[in-house]
Every structure is written in structure tokens, then in C-alpha cells.
Amino acid sequence: MAAELKLVRTPAEEALAERFPAIKASLPGGAQIVKLREAAFERFLKRGLPNRRVEEWKYTDLRALMREAAPFAPIPSDAEAARALGSARTFADLGAIQIAFVNGHHVPGSETVEGLEVVPLDAALAAGASVGPIEAAREDAAYGLNTAFMNDGVMIRVAPGAIVERPVHVRFVNTGGSAFATATRVLVEVGEGASLTLLESHEGLDSAACQLNDVVEIVAGDRARVRHVRLNAEGTQSLALSTLVAKLGAHVSFDTLNVVIGSRMARHQVYLTFAGEHANANINGATMLKDEQHADTTLVVDHAVPHCTSRELFKTVIDGDATGVFQGKIIVRPHAQKTDGRMMSAAVLLSDAGTMNNKPELEIFADDVQCAHGATCGTLDEDLLFYLMARGLPRAEAESLLVQAFLGEAIEAVEDEAVREALIGVVSAWLEARH
Image 1 (cartoon, one colour):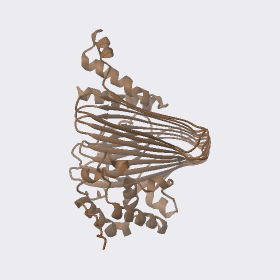
Image 2 (cartoon, rainbow, N blue to C red):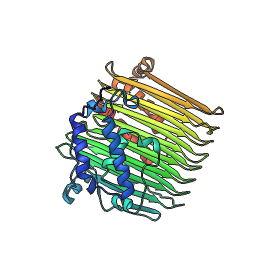
Image 3 (cartoon, one colour):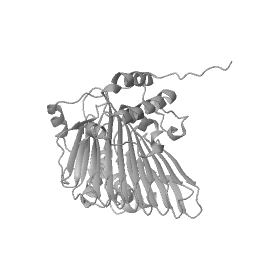
């Protein structure tokens, strides 16, 4: 008789397994959402937290990194929310429409403009809003846990043809001395021919030992234009999981940039699917790590239809004992002819102890395509350093100039000048703190 293998759960897995049955009745959503939650939870029970034996998580062993499961954060009081939101923020001077979250809970009071609607997640789900537009994302462990436990969020709707002139800033602020977890879901629907600039910032205190699991889902209608910028400036004790899901219609123009300077461990996932022809996507990243930080970027771009273009550029700077990870995959379906996909990951090591793991992949099942990928990893050019130092610059300042130039290629792709300048300020502040 064959022996039955039983999954030995960690304390974190045991806590999550006990938590879902206890709170699922209080979570938002109707019968269809309940089915999605239960299916996601069943997958977790069978598989547990992902470890290095899971190919997609081989460089980020979540089972080892997350030994305990923190309780979900309580809803903050009005005074606590006001105090948290009163802190300085990166995108403060852009005149953006702010949608705020404190410790994973939506703070009511979002400003609205013509063509833009912001609906709390519970109301949106009760009205029949759908989640999970891309099937491949549903199999992912982090996304699945968010689906099972998502307890707060918003839906952002842009009416067909509407041009939202001001950026929409979804601001997450995490504060407090005790450990807590979040599971937020932001649903974004951009109507046919509409335009939206979406800013997303995550801020936290160094003392806040958060376990964050945030998902943003964007569905862009035909001929829509979407610009998305995400900043991770979380505290140094946080464990941050984030997933961006994007489904693009025909003739869509879509840009996204993820900037990482915070978190003890961060993993940002992008699942993008071309659902309509002649769409264009630019997916960029700029990551700056120091000390013992660990940051993972995992990307899956699915060219499911013909005549689409994707460009992926990720720049990573590593100092101290930090570890960077890039896993990128471009899939070209059999009928997706005339696909043009290019992917590049480049890393600079500022110390001998730093580590960078690169794994770019192409899966091409069509024969009339142009696809390429590449990865580089090295140190700053000593000849260029010598050139700058020979003209009177101290070594630290020379290094900073070269790092700024290296990261600039990814950041300069941001069209909005004010947003771009704010991000350049983030890079400059990180470099100043390094010295």
C-alpha cells in the first residue's frame, strides 16, 4: 500500500488555514466571489506557501521568509487615519486626486471629477464587479491568498471617452509598532477611448513589521491610454507582496513603472495579457537595494493576439548584502503573428556581497515574430569613475552620477514631467542616504 504524503505546515500556514473559516462570512462579495475565495483557499491548503522548489518562487522562498502570519490590521480611528495621512508623501505637489488607505483600510473622502467614479470594494462587489480578469494570475500563490482574504479596497471607473486630466493617487500608509497583515484589492476599469494616470505609493515606518499583500487589476477598453507608476517606500521591517494584473483591449497604450526602495522583502508581480490587436505596453522597473534587502520582480507578458508590441526594461542597483531577482517571461501564442517583444534586465553591484538573479524567458509558438531578451550584471565602469574623479568629483559623487544615469533610462520613460521629477528625487535621496 502506497504511503500517503501529508503536507507539514509551518506556523504561518497553520494560522492562515485556521483564519479563513473564521472570517470568511465577514468578507465582502456575493456568491460568485465566495466561490473564488473558496477555490483560492483550497489551492493554498493543497500547496501551502511557495518555496524554492516552486519554479516561479525559486529565488524567493516565501515559506522560509514568512514563518508567522500576522493578524489583519483593525480599522483605524479617524484620528489615527488623519495622523498617518498627515505625514509627508512623494507625490504631494502634483495636484493628484487622492484615494487613501491606512493599514490596508480605505479612508472615505476621495475627491471625484467628471468621468471618474470611485466605489468602495464591498459596494462594487455587491453590485456585481468581477475580479480575476487573467486566468494565469489565479494560479499564483500570492494572488490566491489575496483573493481568499481581500477585505478592503476600491473600484476606480473611468467613463468611456473621459480624459482624467489630473493623476489619481492611490496612497497606502502603514503605521504602528505591532505586526499586522493587509489584503487590499484595487479594481480599475478604463473605458473605451478613455485616459488615466494612476499613481500608487506604499509608505511605512521602519518599526512597522507589516505583511502586505496588495493587488491592482486594470482592465483597459479599446483605444484607452493608461499610465501607471508604483513606488514601494515601505519600512525596512515589512514583507510586501504586490501583483499588477492588466488586460488590454485593441489599440491600447499602456505604461507601467515600479520603483522599489523599501521593504525587507518585496516581490512585485506583473501579469499582462493582450486581449485586442495593435496594443502597446511598456513595463519598466527601477530597484535600489541596500543592507540585507531582498526584492523580486516577476513578469509574465502574454501575447494572445497578433500585432502587439511590448517593451520591458528593468534596472537594479544593489549595495551591501542585498539580493535582487528578475524573472521575466514573454509568451507568444500560436496565432499571435506580427508580435514584437523585447525584454532587458540590467543590474549594477555596488558591493562584493550583493547578489543578482536573472531569469529571462521566451515561449514562442508563432513563426512571424520579433522577440528578444537579455540580462547583464556588473559593477560601475572604473574608467568612467576615473574620468569624473579626474575632474574634481569625489568618488561618492561620481558613483551617484553614474547610478542616476543607469536608472534614468527606466525613469525617463515616464511622460508626466512632475511625476518624473518626483521619482528622480526619490533616487537622489536614496543615493544621499547611502553616503
